Image (cartoon, rainbow, N blue to C red; front, side, top):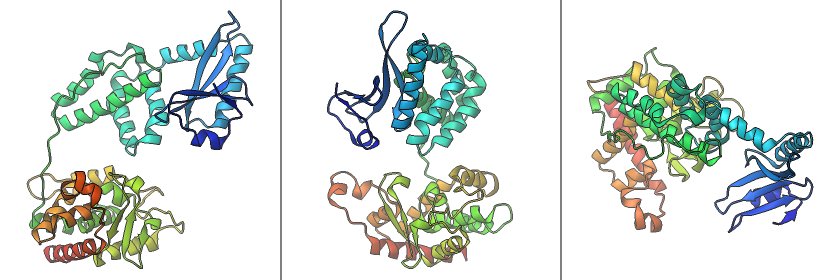
Length: 391
């Protein structure tokens, strides 16, 4: 049990091979428990006044709870213990009394926001699909049947994809609640998804591409939405990546857009060469954006437009042809179109930032080529082909 004056630098950098408690010499009783997995948890060790028994109460996890905040929370708990209270028992009582809505708020704040790029979707599902049914129930009182009723009702209504999404969020939510000690068990443990996802294979025909592109000029969608969708057709990148584009990611002089690793699905930095049509759209967006280097290029509120808003606009206002299409179908359409005009599969994958097929497995380990020149040629060819379709 090492003892030292804990500092921000030490807390941020410490790692261990076996679980270790570091006790703070500045505030006696405060400890940092570090696990080999990298998890760091603040605890307070104190003596309960009623029986002089040593007690441990968890104060939170780092980095959500900083060293400064941990010391403040420890002092508050120590003061309560000195007045005859039992902070550990009080916390256990709060956990027992916590409703699903209470726990959901903590889940979003403590876990989802720091760790999930899709935390807003988790929050939406909890508020719209879960809270109306069990939000006011005590967490410890929720049964497996309560959870399955929510999932099965959605599945029975034909919304199987939504049912799978609800299942995934509830599984993550209850696992977190158990791991952090808010619940003794998860009511969804061992429950499998009610249906398997259906692999979409929708590819827009040339006629549908022309109709979809033409509909973007209508007054039914905003100019921001229209330009995001045009860039999806021109670049083949993911909707969330285009929506989140910032000034700092764009080099107009070189005609390139660099998506940082924190915003890509495979967590690899991805350089997208820009065709003349794509560069024109982005140049206008850069000129219209705020002065800050990191300003979002596509925004209506000061924050980047959400990909969900683009999907909703497509679903409600931009459907063409007999079969429904989504923004992600554009990506599949671009990949198919590139292949049809003779662009090699490994170059198409490089454009899409895919680690599969030619770049998967052993090949992916040894083949680190980024194909910048080939990607630029491919996107220029695709841009010219797209222009021939829409004109």
